[in-house]
Figure 1 (tube, rainbow, N blue to C red):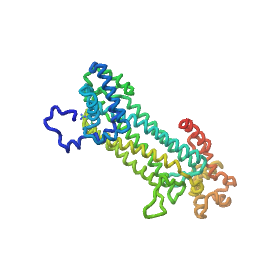
Figure 2: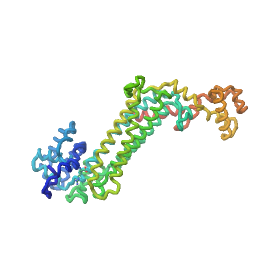
Figure 3: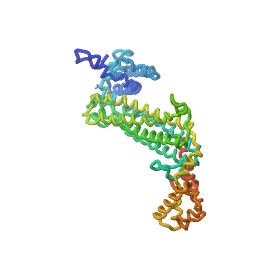
Figure 4: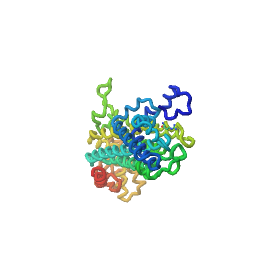
Length: 458
Ligand code: ARG
């Protein structure tokens, strides 16, 4: 049964109905719709639209419906109702008869859908936050396991300076920490409840909207009804959080793909998250990571699509807004899956320590150190940089690392160079010298890990 037949003499064409109906995807908001309806029953009871017993009957029936659907909302998708609001109302009327027809007094599907989706977004924030925390834990555990293992650090994908594997992993922990903070900011902006805005001008009944907002877990009622029914900032906000976080996930995926390649061979991914080739028996492909990298595009597409849907959309509600849900649901599911998959990747990820050290040793990644050594001997940095570059050239011509050049060779670059240079060129020493906040030294890593462990494992 449609919610709006009165002024029509003909029913909609089947083709239009198929085009217009949203139940096949908005059924996902069934529980939010019932929660909103229970709060609305109370609100219109307070406004003397319902008697106490009518309110109780409605709430009880809605509660029953909630319990029935709680573990099986998928089944709703195949019903013939126009949308989730029509479905819940029909089921309510089936339970309590004509009393069910009173519930929509003073309410519109416009404020109803705005509420449902905002409630959905608010719980999505909590679900994603939890899985980001689990990912952080997996990363922190891995960083601890390889706390002091030397690893090549890159800029321009050229070996630059040695770091530790822990320092690399902890870089991503910082990114995911910001993703969580961004979600919390977004949640703060979702503290305004649109229910009571009705179709566009506000409800005509004496509803205490602040109390209604609080009963639904919000801090406040929205301040303008035109804005409230047409606002989808929370959808954009959540998609934007998702997109930035997916960028982080895709960068991590790409780094790991490179480190796992035959050329690098610094890490080994577990059989659990890789697949083989149907043709080449030797292959073990990093599919989980490639899919995470690929799905980043899909999530950014959802954000872009939503922005274009809202662009230049006149106030207040327009049916265009129904296009908000599918991409939001898909993007949030995708984001959630990718976070969980990345946690699984880290569960059994192994570092090939020796290969990583060899790579860190190669590529002259201690050349800055030689320059700093010369600075300590009283040479200006610019000149020291030039001299160290010459030493690299000498190393290249002799096909050896800086520390493998003889003292004689090094002295030919500058006579101030003494035997103590070799200690200074050692990777371990290079790492320990970076003992500032945010630096790679082991004391810094230990301090960061201590704080993180307290934050995530207590
Ligand atoms: N299915 C609609 C949506 O998702 C619900 C609101 C319908 N409102 C209306 N005035 N037709 O946006």
